[in-house]
Image (tube, rainbow, N blue to C red; front, side):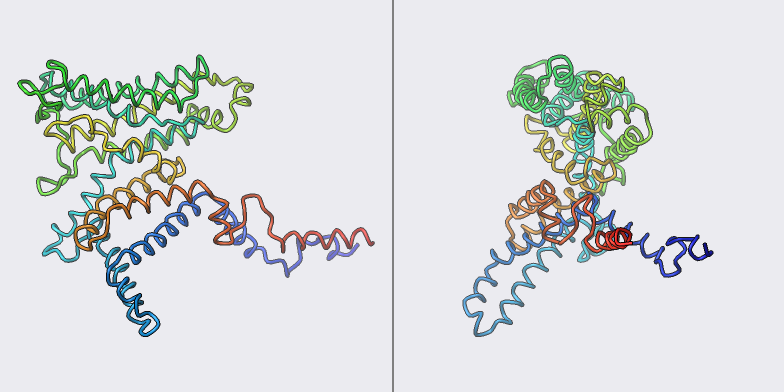
Length: 423
């Protein structure tokens, strides 16, 4: 046997080793979950652009004589779409029409402020997702966090920062216990967490309404309005960048929560049990994991994370007192954030920032361009729609499905087998 024959096909100098590695990396990228989130946002933005152009008066007017002067309609479409997204950028990132940098950067601080509760609540939803649970109770958990944190803030007199710490811990504990009810029912009776968390949402709404309408609990003294008294300065989250901006230290707490969630899921044994149960509860049970205990524990931690969103609202954003609508739909928006972030802490951070930008920039689009704020909501809904249908997104862009072997590669491996059989 010659040396050339002994080396076999691995020693073939014509084998493109490096390109094959790049193809493997590219294959992982295009079949992974991250690319689906990016493409879902891209498709939603394109559809949003079509809606912006269709609702623009100049575009509608130019469409009437499109065949006579098509350039006018193209120019009108470009003007409407570019103007809308330029306004979105000015309202969410940087206002390049501002007189100085300090004023121009204010939209970014507003984006971070709006993103703070979305990130925290999204972590609570995403953590439960990783354990195979659907935490739809973000609204109720936020309301209970607001009730407990607001009670400690307005009814107990403590110095700063003990007062602030006590209010934050009280809110997180209340939210954790509220979510823990669903976890306990799941562990002991097998009750579906979607049903129990939705029902707990309704209970929390009416329980908070009763607290706000009752003197001595949450209602402001001497008032008949269903609203609390203003939060005392000793229990308010300090401003992060000074009085010129509304961004508060709740954003740093949310970032700390992201770091904790990442460590919990990726570096701790408890997080490994969460992921194992989420992948296959039956196999995890056979491996000796207490599945019921995991359900209870993950809901307690998820509720505490959502509780950060609740206390950041009452102690950082709505410090003048809050009513029954303090959750502002964040509990349900957190589901969207968790889906877009693929239940990954870093992905949820990015998704929360994106949706915070949509919220702040949407106001500028509406005020400066006359674009209905509902279009921004449609874009967010389309993102969820496309994320929920990965095969559709892959089909639209011609991407291979996960685990699918490219045809060329299959034929390449099939030809040597035919030669061996013929030999």
